[in-house]
Each structure stands twice: as C-alpha cells, then as structure tokens.
Image (cartoon, rainbow over all chains, first blue to last red; front, side):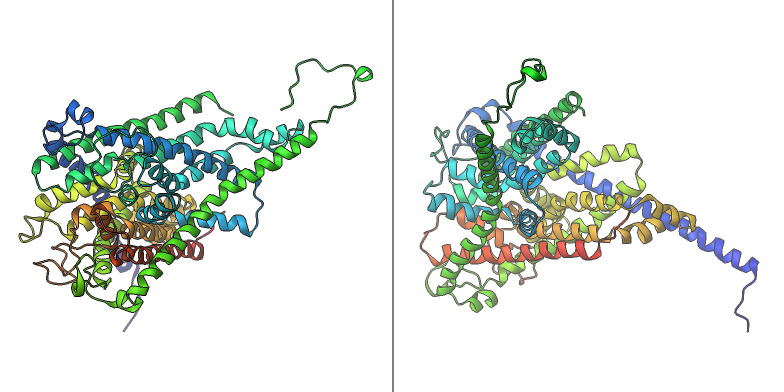
Amino acid sequence: MSTSVTTAQGSEQYHARLRVRRVLSEFWRWIFFASTALAIVLLGMLLYSILVPGLPWLSWNLITEMPSRIPEQAGMNSAIWGSIWVVLGSAVLSFVLGLGTAIYLEEYAEKNRWTAFIQTNISNLAGVPSIVYGLLGLVVFVDLMNMGRSVLAGAFTMAILILLIVVISAREAIRAVPSSLRQASYGLGATKWQTVRSHVLPVAFPGILTGVILAMSRAIGETAPLIVVGGASQVLFRPGSPTDPFMVMPLQIYNWTGRPQPEFEHLAAAAIIVLMIVLLIVNSLAIGLRHYFSKKTRI
Amino acid sequence: MVSMTTTPPRPEERAPLDLSGKKKRQASERLVKYVLVACSLVTVATTVGIIAILLYEALRFFRDIPFWNFLAGSTWTPLFSGSQQEFGVVPLVMGTLMTSVVAAIISLPLGLGAAIYLSEIASERGRSVLKPILEVLAGVPTIVYGFFALTFITPVLLQPLIPGIGTFNGLSAGIAIGIMALPTVTSLSEDALRAVPRSLREAGFALGATKFETSVRVVVPAAVSGIVASFLLAISRAIGETMIVAVAAGQAPAGQSGGSDGWWDLTESMQTMTGFIAYTFSSDISRESTAFHSLFGVGLLLFAMTYLMNLLSQWVTKRYQEEYE
C-alpha cells in the first residue's frame, strides 16, 4: 500500500477542502454579524419596552409635581432636584480630589513602589460593586461624620464612587500634554507648580472637563449606593439645604417599579424617559465640549 | 508668577536679580505638593475604609452567628423572628452565581462575536455606525435594565416559552445583566483585537488562511489576554450588579419561594447577595439587629468575590500578554 497521493488527487482534496473552508468562513462571518445585530435588536427592544408604556404618561405634571399615592397626580419633582443636588455636589468634590490625584500621579510622583501601589489600588477600586460604596458611605458619612441620611452624605458617597472615573480621564488628559510645553516653562525658570498651573492644566482642561461630565452621567444613573445611604422612602419636598433628606431620579423609578398597580409601572417608564433625556443632554454636552475645545486649542 | 512687562534694560544698568520671592515660592511649592499627596491618599483611604468597615461590622455579626454556619448554612431568613431566623448564606450565593452564569452565557459569546465583527469584518463605515450604538447600551442606567427585565423580558419573551415562570425570576434578571455586561466585553475585547499588529493577519492570509481562520486562529489567540480580562471583568460586574436583581429577581432567596424546585430553579424568585442588601435597606430595619449586621457579612463576601475576580483578571493580563513592537 502506498501513502503518497498523486498531485491530481491532492489538488482535488485541496479544492474540496477549500470550498468547505470558504463556506465555513462565510458562515461565521454571518454569526459574528448576527451577534452584533442581536445587541442592537436588544437595544431596540429596551427602548420599545420603555417608550410604549411611558410616552402616554409623559407630562409636565411628572416634572413639576411631587410623588403621590394617586398615579395621575404623581410627579418626580423632588427626585429631579435631589439628583441635581447630589450630582453637582459629587461632581465638585470628585473634580477637586480627582484632579489633585491625577496631577500628583502624573507630574509629581516618582516611579516607586508606593506610586505603583496607588495605581493598582485605583484599578482594583474600579471593580468594587457600587453597593459596597453604599455600605462605606453609610458607616463613614451617615454615622461617623454624623451627616445623617442627607444630601451631603449622598454627594460624598457618590463622589468617592465617581472619583476613579475623574482620576483616570484627568490622567489621560494630563499625559497627552506634550512635554515640550513643560520644558519651555522650566527653561524660563518657572517652578513645578507654576508650570502645571499655567501651562499643563489649561491645555489638559477640555479632557478633564469631559471626564468630569462623563462621571456626572454615571452619577445620574447610579442607584444602588443611594438606597443604602439615603433609604428608599418617599421624599415629598425638594432639598433646601445639604442636610435635608433626598430622593434621586433612579431611586424614584425603583420605587414606582416596585408597586403592584400597573399605572405606577407606566409612570416609571415615563420617568425613565425623562432620565434618559437628561443623560442624553449631559453626554452630548461632553461630546460637544470636546469637539469645541479640540478645534480651539490645537498644539 | 513672574511677569515681564517692560523691555529688558541694558546690562550695565540692570539691577541685581530680585530673588526675594524664592523662599515664598519654595514654601508654596511644598504646600501644593502636600495637598496633592493628600488628594491621592483619598483613593487609598477608600480601600482601607471599605475593608476595615466590612471586617469590623462583619466580625460583630460573626459573634452572633458562627462563621461556618453563615458560610455553609442552607437557609437564609434574616428578617424572620425567633428560632425561624437563620443566616445560611448559600441560597444568596447560589442566586448570585446562577444569575451571573446566565449573564455570562449571554454576554461572553455575543460580546466576543460582536467584537470580532467590529474589529475584523466590519468596514470602517459600518464600524463607525455600530460602535456608538453599542456605547449607548453601556450608558443605560442599570435600573432601566431592571425595568426591562420585569416588564418585557419576563412577560413578553419568557412567558410564552416557559408558561409557569414567576413574575420575579432569576432567569430574566440574568438575561438583563447579560445585556448590560455585553458592551463591556465587546469594547474591551475589540480594543485587544485591534491591538494585534496587522502583520500577523497578513502572515495568516499569505499562508492561504481564510478570513475566519485568520481571525479565530491567529488574531484571537494573540489577543487572548485582553479577551479573558474582559470576560472576567464582565463576570465581576455581573456579581456586583444590584438594581437589576433588586427589581427583577424577587425577594425570596433561591429555593425558598413557594413554587421553587430548589437552588437551581431559575424560573422562580432568586434573591442575590446584592439584592438582599438593597432590599433590606429599602425596608426599614433596626440598626442594632443581627439582620442589620448580616448585611456587612454579605457585603464582605461580595467584596471578596469581586476582588478575587479583579486580581485574577490583572494576573491573566500580565501573565498572558503578548508584547509586540
């Protein structure tokens, strides 16, 4: 018996195999396309499931009225104001702390074990479930610092949560500043902080701002830590000071979704539409700002 | 800041350089540095704070309930009274694992498939349309996915297939978590795939491989560390996801609702670890009860699980990363 094949036989086998391989390639191409398409179909279903029950319930009442037992009269005014308080508070706090951390890590820190530890720590923190931040906020801010279940405690907890987003994007923005700028500043005798403040930060600013806005958009949608810190009970007034109790938009949606009456489910859908519109505006703002500044400051 | 307003004087009439501000500048430089160091310490303090608080409060809980009874006990009824109150965490852990497994079955293959499509197959134009749409999915708040699971996935998609399925069930929550985690897998895997140098693909084609063979047997293996890291991150997010399960998975732990056949029964209510924490805080609970302290025991376990996943993910990235010039 012979193990060798003639050229003709080999070629025939090769071509038969090639046809199979080509069909297989084409087949998988469609599978990969289908998985992308399925993701988009799912997004479509998600929007459908919100728009159909929600649109008929969308009204000015929803924005101007306080929560109520009667679904026709219920609104999310207190939740909108609560979200504004908490999100703005956490944005300011995380901006200050995050920018400081980013400047330190990019401009000041030496490459040693401690710096490496801070970096690893930041990436580890990014993986901690948000509800665990809620437990931290409950013990540290609500209890130990005696803030109670207030706007302040909510803003601090949320600030810690979104701090990582600010740090990571601010670092990227600072790193993107060309080192020739720093060298020129040092060459004129400026100190480190003078260089950072007057030359690095202005150039990095659009990137940092975009990061803060994206962090805000995360804070707007975040619910879990605020259940722990703020509690999910109804709040029937707007917060007037940082020590007042609060309700935020996603928490109001959670509250309505959990009720047995279908009217509240529809109300929740309408509230989700409002929430998504707010997110859309905030995200467009980030994109718009980036676009505007990238035209203005080009180095 | 030093400002120069006048034209420099001729050398012979130039006054000696005024360096009197140097001390002040040095002092403020030091001050700035201290402030910045303090900022960077906040992230470290957060980690220390989380671990310290979870450990401290959990230890108070373990004084009442022995650690082993907590970890291996098979009944979870913290809000019951008297002798019916039991703190066996296994049903909660099963709830978390079962919903996460469903989420993984949805998000990992779909996410990787979409990543391969976007990176290897789609035209630049197709990609520029499809990618932003997937990013929209990533920006949707998780409470919205919870609403979707409760009001659409269960009644519209699952009810016709599984007629007896409960209003609250683990399956719908798992599916919704899977959809939520999908963009994580896609965007991180796509980054990994795109980082593979073009020359590797060209070598594959030159050897006569088809597009599919090149993608799956050359590019994917070269990007495997990034892909596995994206998988682990998605699973870690699934374990930690709270709002979807709080809305859709129900408030009875796995195997403890009326119609449930056991821990594995995804068609019935299946409270997870995160779901328990959220549910307990949305109902008022005494701050001095064992049930309240049990929250931190569960929180500690949750933290440990996700932390291990993250460490694993970092290890995989380091260990299996291919370096290209």
